[in-house]
Image 1: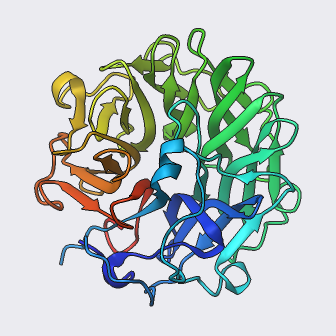
Image 2: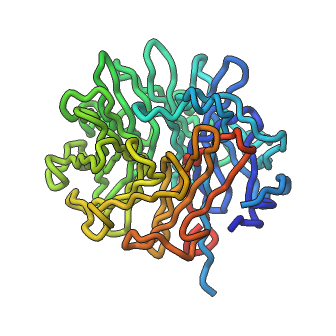
Length: 63
Length: 365
């Protein structure tokens, strides 16, 4: 079942910086790390994002 | 109170035509800001590495190529990432960041290392051994051949001269034109077990083990390599290691409608006998015409959680997760009959879960 302590519906989109995620890890203090590509226009860069805990915003989705 | 079990997965949401073409493009997610960690990456929760060309994860989910990026956490909180950089050829790009996302000045040049071995190199997975050496696995390809590639770096990012030939090992099975390593696990004695695909005559899964100095381990499989193909078209996409050293692997079968293919390899490279028919567990989802599995973890109770997608045609890829009990049977207490689906973005969207990790809230996160 979705983890509501992570985000409403347990779900968050990584749409900032046109991030296409590929892999994930979790830090010792329970923060989610995501690695992928950030593509803006013709430029693609390696990107690492870290999410805050208890993500405050997300649309409601149904599992 | 028993700690709850939790897994976190990451997925890519693609437009139908994009998925069909195998080319990654802009996500079509709603414009909802993700919750950036303000203590990471200068406040926006994101750090990027730009060496001037394509520096990222080679796009697509092409079964014949190694196409992903990887991430690993050091025990001191520093973050390692592996990707591909485009120079005269494709090269491995390994970057290390401090805990706040700042490039680590003690690693390579300004926090990044580019490994160019004279071929096209891609690196989809990364791990850290017991003494802090960095192991990257991937693909080396040139002139119609493709090999599994294993590279080991010292903690400062330099190639480890004590590993293989100058820090690199190439593993090729026959006249392989599609071989690659996609996933790696570090075992006792800093042995390196990697999984991927080989195609000397049809696609086959590949699991191999190297000793800590980079030699193929003669006590594993046949000369260090286990190759098999129960249906004539499989690949290993992700692996996880049990505490006893056995490897649970998941992958994809390209000839049937199976969503998930799982198998377990013993410490000697043999297939674990109790795993289903032919010692594989193929998970078929009712109504699904195709699927794939790209991530796996093992929880503290020995259960396997695999993630990927299942699809009814190209335009309906759903995130997919299945949990298996230690004997490989499907866990009926997980989701609906052991399976969780998540449909995102409407009927024309295609979603693929590409990674999974355990959290930290108790025994399994």
